[in-house]
Length: 206
Image (tube, rainbow, N blue to C red; front, side):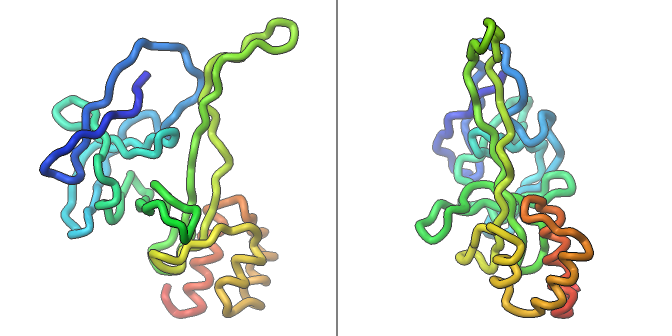
């Protein structure tokens, strides 16, 4: 198993420390979005591009990459503007008192407002249950949490489709009709993104 890395200082703000390799222990599930590294692109705030095999660690909320056959984690994710991981786009949101959304989040829509999704896994230690049944060490994917990003500083958790439509503020009748037709769920990021794309089309953005 691969642990989280220890970040070290470097002249390159996007460079991190090598990942350590502890003693292997059997663990079910995965701490990663995808177990295998996927070729991707990382843009910093100056829009300089770094291409590398990437992997998102959902448990430690870190972005890993391969360089010279070694695994590293990005030391300063706040310097990241956006990430293309295969066909998916991620951004990094710095922790703030203004919003509970932070860390790496999937960004579903190219225009603002956009749907963001926070993905996370939790680790549970081995337990002995009824009749001696052993439940092994395991990573379990938590329910995804979805947000409406109106700007870089205005991010709201989506508690219901109604609250999302209210926050958008316009075309409510058209959006409610779309929700009924498509059966949009507040728990499905792809469906919420579809609703936002429809909203953008009403505004003439698409």
